[in-house]
Image (cartoon, rainbow, N blue to C red):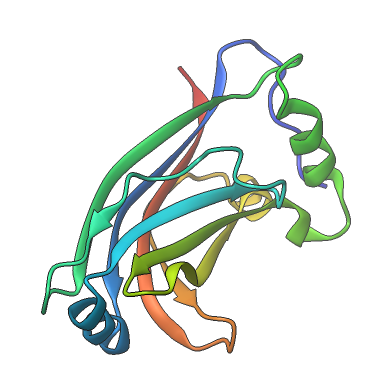
Length: 159
């Protein structure tokens, strides 16, 4: 059984999106459409709640897009995330504690489109007893084809 997050005050969850390395198809698309990319964070499958990186222009011919974005979520009794996080970590289904990263692009005439998703499991992270620092996650599209890599950090601890 995975322990619940500590109940002591001043606990937090820090999520960072460092950068994205585009696969060859996305590099070509970025050149054609002048893609502007962003990443939304969906904690526990509850929606993004406004957790989104600033938009960054993918430069022609370059695979690396830097975000340098970080967000801190207070995790303590009484905060909106507390009960859902405790329930997700107690759940039999480990997928309930996934943190999803949704890569989106805006360009051309299509407007903004979801390009792919990546995820990190908070339950596994707590079970192993370590933070994810600069984890490189595959971004897969709706056909399960890898289209990019996201570099993210997720830290649970005290301020």
